Length: 638
Image (tube, rainbow, N blue to C red; front, side, top):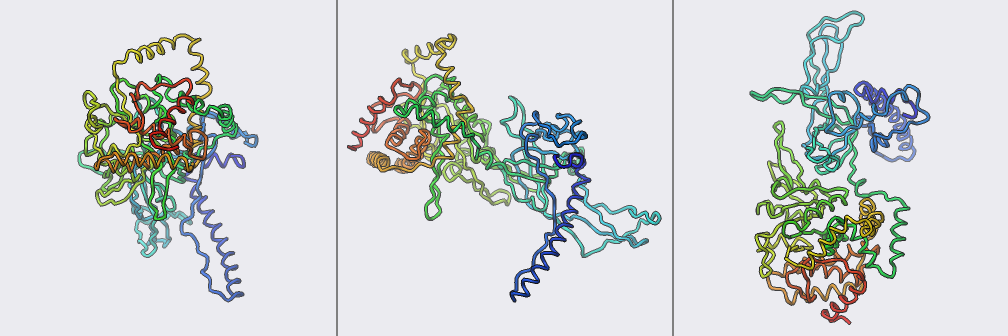
């Protein structure tokens, strides 16, 4: 656009005419470079007397057009460059904004222009081999010409009906001979991309479109990848089915594909924002827990109190450090959280807010999800079996929120065991055997079965199996008990929201830690810090693990082993939250308190209490000093 804006306009609006010319030019340039490289190779081989492999030439050469910058990121604000000609500047900004529509807004007017679409790969087909061209010879004029496949007729090559040559005079021949031995084939793959649900409005249905990949573009993306595809919109006839109308289906022929998974996870945070985080912690250097609680208050601020839940949500989103031993065995760094509580305790509010904090998130409900919808399913399209990604695969590298966890069938719950612990999904369906990555955080919410009975185990109260519950690092129980003191505190808070003076502190908090800043902070500490355990933290965690092993029953031994891994992950997450690269005793004890909150009977704290009634204290550092003394005494650590 800066160098030759008229040519840029022609490429964007007539790609089917100019892209083949670009490919021919690139092929010619390759031949010239090949001849020069071949001469250099022959001279060096002759001088040194060595036999080196000769340079190779690529069979298919393509010029890939990639669109970046303001036109893709923010189509509403496209700046004009000073070097653009009058021809280009006379075009309106909205005219070029149509080149980057959402998938749901693709229409007939976009056919034949170079579009750029953003979406998530939900289906990936197998790699095929298609015939690229056939060469015929006219029996009358003996001229040779090539016939290419037609996409509208599903890549079939039609037989020529007339001779294309007209010089020196028009050839009226209709008899042609197919030349054998010069068949040209291309790699071919079909995928389907779907627009992101995060950019859709309430009640909108995400749209999808099939994408055709050829040659060097095949097999570079998989189901669950976020991609930016540049190509040309065209159409093809639907398959011939009995008593079914044959229509033209839109299809996108890709010219360039770019994976943006790494870009979404590796967010660039400005230096001034990082300096703001450092200044914040320098102000709370003497009272670090007070600074931590200031951050936690910004988690789901519409819900009053619930300190334990907000701390658990934050530690779950931040997560620990993945560990890989010498044999290659991986111990996941992502934590999982399950909220068990009565209706009206704010479980769904935390799920939706956590999804906003994650750059990659999928929200679903147990009632509307099956095992195939959560993991992966095999679908048949055009006589071919394809894998279609489910919620856990689409949330790879992010967060998967599952509301109404108890509404899922037992068979459906069993399918996510591997996805939560090994972070993979092994598939063997319809002859398709593969393993997909599900490196995701699972945040579930469920209601107890009837009235919650504290004397019964969590498995009995929720109808969830023990092995599934053991895969959650934190399980918090929110019981709506009749507590007059707590009801008065909550009612006073709701009534005080109408008074501006009493709500001034909350306004200051919203200005200090808005949603965008909180999201940036979580992603910064998650990517920047890799905390390691100190000797004091190792001693505390080891003593607590030994205490749990001594009181655990034979059936609960497996749970305590996973508890040790959960303790390490939560301690590392708390160190990241505290803007540190070392896990101290404070982080280890905080992780123990989170684990203790997940238990019906506490082994180390005198009273755990109801997580629903946990509130922020005025002096958290003094409160922690008392808890630390009590815990160290129970663990017999001087």
